[in-house]
View (cartoon, rainbow, N blue to C red):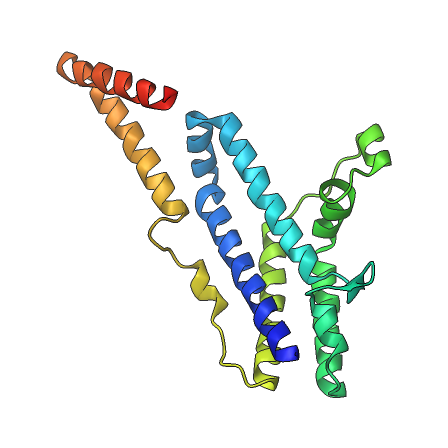
Length: 212
């Protein structure tokens, strides 16, 4: 049973690393954010918040209690309750406590804004704590250490979660590439009379495509 739970939580950890990779690829620098704001500020603001909130909830689910409302959760604390090895249990408990410390801002967002609309925060317009990049990076490192211990103890091959941080075709870098290419083509098309004719024709075709 515990092997199945480790496999399931391993998939969640891998997806969390992938989500963080995509967020950093698209919004990971002031230059990229400025470019996206030039393209479609309302849309990309929504995308950023949606991606960040998804990451917040992914962290929170991993730190859920063993059970909620009588139903067991797929969480580190649930796995901990199944481990009888006192030494391993103590080591994992320490790492989980460190993880909780690094994700305090994340839990505040989950409890006060995302999973619930905390009344006092909403009525008094209380600001939420910032989610710092370095804290997320440290939290991911702790999660990897937890998974390393679990995989070693229960004879799973080691997983290099950092590999999910590498670029793949069709990821966030691909999106930025085509957006940037489009902007450069737009500038070229409007630079001379000859290119302007191409721009007008292409602009008409794109607007028609968007309407369809």
